[in-house]
Length: 106
Image (cartoon, rainbow, N blue to C red; front, side, top):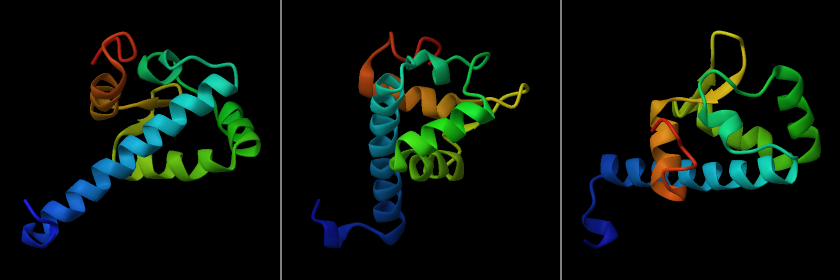
């Protein structure tokens, strides 16, 4: 379907999902470069502490923007322990992108 035939809502949804997937891909890469594993954010009982988020933001300028996109789109949140984790939707997207092992509970 040509882009001009898409409704504004469909186009916006496409861009949001594309942005989410881009951010999830970047987050996976940045976690790995910082010595973390993807399960750090895919397991709801784990997550990244506030201090770890600050450290990632300082090490990788892209981190803060991706974190913001994930939070604003409800793909990530803070768990009961105040740690940054993916929501069910975020885990589902990770599962779609990287396979079952990456999003163990999706």
